[in-house]
Image 1: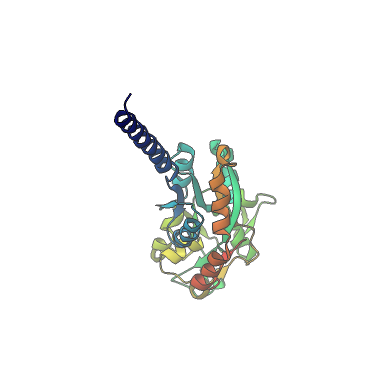
Image 2: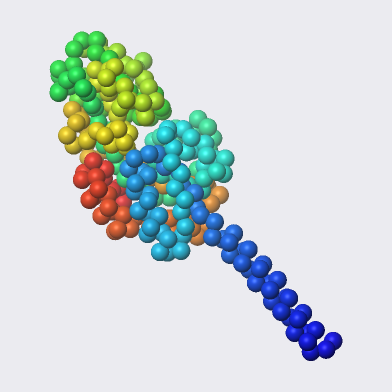
Length: 267
């Protein structure tokens, strides 16, 4: 083989190898898809995205409008992680649906609040008032526990977050419980006398937990939200980078500045 043919062959091989490595690099650069609910979770993850990119991790934020689909999408492989739920909710979903998920880090805490357009104080609720609670596992029970904590009802001993209206054993005001999708509760306040609303959906609807809630959970509430992935992915390098970015000082400062106590960093 003469020198010119050898040089041409070497150039062709080099180009082929470069193309192969380029394709491989593109595959590795595929963004990590993270599911969130609208409002604070989405806002916070836009900041996490910026921090993570500086560490070489690309993130695509995928927004959902309910609490069911982010876990279903994660199980189906349409997401790599999600950030919107607390551990009691995750535990209930794993038990009910058999998901092979694991929590890899704490995120934020959203103290649940009670809101009303009809009364300024809980004690002003009239007998037979219509009271809205989330219809999903754990958050409905959480709303009932908040009512119990404020002295309006009493639940069966030991029911905890699994509580439903059927577990109410004392109801002096004869409250009528209306179970709705958590995202619909802020929009239903005109039709209800009061409602227990998750802070992320309250904020998305323009409610200010610090000013508009007539009662709230304690800041020491155990319902800190978590980052969730599939168990099979727990040892992948991107997981540690994702947790590091979320739990960075930059993200903590954003939470404190943006939400002014309505959302609390849980890490």
